[in-house]
Length: 253
Ligand code: ADP
Image 1 (cartoon, rainbow, N blue to C red):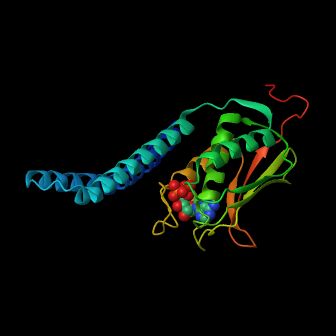
Image 2 (image 1 turned 60 degrees about the vertical axis):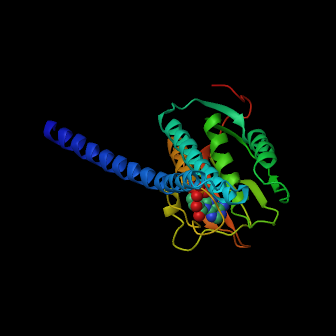
Image 3 (image 1 turned 135 degrees about the horizontal axis):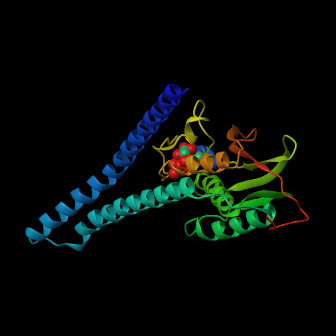
């Protein structure tokens, strides 16, 4: 038994190391592209300064690219920190009204996410039950899913999002976030939860590919499951399961 335990520990250790190595590799890779951009354009700027040609018009492009590269690196660092926090944080479960939390997240996100001039997203929050979960983590989860639903709706179109609850196994509920956006391409419905997998990387949609890995981690920690299916009317439906709470004892332990 001792030998088996050691064998098991070694195997787990190897799996962790492999996971860490590929994670570090992906982070390094994702940071290198914007960094190359920042370094390249900074050198270009320095050269034009040396050559005495500091024409405001020719400065505009390098400055825009440097700022975009820095912003991208900042976003990646932000998402990595959220990911690390979600991994390390201990679970503080309470009973709370999911409709209140969802409405709150919707208000905050719709006010901040869409750029000026873009139509306001239309989000319908259906009747949602009391759940037993870590409220901060569930906020993060809804924030990522609703944020994606808005982001992956073509520019110029108002995002239409429905958040609803469905029965699941006894004591559990399935929550669905459905959108009418561009949808998840065939064959990528599982891979997008793995981290750093971007199904629309070539389009106008900026991102790090960490949001859904964070979502999956949060739902796993709660003993639930998360998945995506196509929305029959176009777009996608992300659904996750949570334990039901006691509606008489909201915010109790
Ligand atoms: P990010 O949005 O930063 O790329 P995520 O981990 O949140 O990373 O999502 C991974 C990928 O899954 C996205 O790049 C996108 O291709 C796809 N995706 C996520 N949410 C949606 C959605 N609501 N509609 C269509 N595709 C989506």
